[in-house]
Image (cartoon, one colour):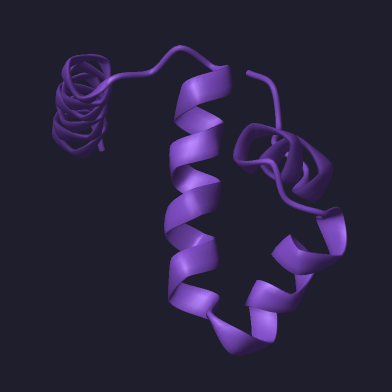
Length: 68
């Protein structure tokens, strides 16, 4: 999985990297949502894939609990 950098977000949005970094103080919720969206975009994750990953996680968690 490719990690996302402020530089990547800035390029995607046509903004300066400093603008994105300023969102930490001025718009922290917006920054979190944008970071999640950018991460999904660069890693080719759509809602369907995310739901499948969460289902797999739940199956693994259930198996680990049963085996303990």
